[in-house]
Length: 338
Image 1 (tube, rainbow, N blue to C red):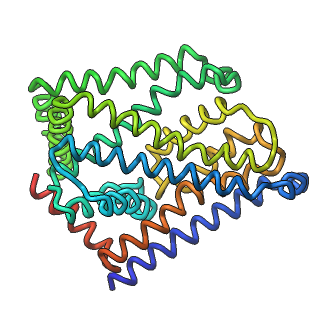
Image 2: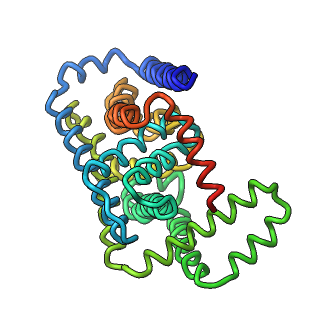
């Protein structure tokens, strides 16, 4: 039963991904693209894989740094499992919610408490989003095509607001005002929603308390977060180089930061569909005619589905075919404990 449930989910995801990939290539392909494809340099694939490897390495070092801040420690094999399992369950679940559960499962297995695992995962996510928000105005300033659609003052205002929100939240967490506000408004929520609201509040407050004790280590983790994301996104320029056409690296990276910020709030499994459509919309006029769909699929396979395959092997080897049931059980136990 568990095996059928898992394999059915994997089959649906594979069919969905293949259908999206085929549609993207079909509707964007142009016969003129063959001229560039015949010039494609295979070494660019190695460059893309190298950039991905460096990105995943720094994702692992960020995890180690955050774990040590909480007073815990993770052996290197467990770091690899946590990082890659995130990709596997994130793709299998709506809104990538399973990624966080997978990380908790492996960290718990390595001896890290559920409470501290939750704090680490929450801070990792916040750092990634915060980094992308900080980068947006820096890179978007150079992109006239984007700023003609969304004026630079608007981008700056939105970025400042989003940067100010976590800063204000951290300051508020040192008071009892958030708890009072949640208590007042949650009276109108259902019991489960109310519990989730307080759970998020206590997780965030615990994260603020722990991270506030070692600001230098937090800064290091933030830098590692930025390096990790940047190298993972560099897989795209690597493929651009393979097609041997001129492009502006700053413009490309700025658009990758923008696209991936949107994907953090995507409701689809692993951002599938939205990622490809966003890539086509942002890069269609920057790449040779008919190649944007192929490049979108290459990017997604390298940066998302290759780690997904590795994560699947690691996760299934550790938890077997009933991994989805174990993930659901971990979610329920976490909610009961809090």
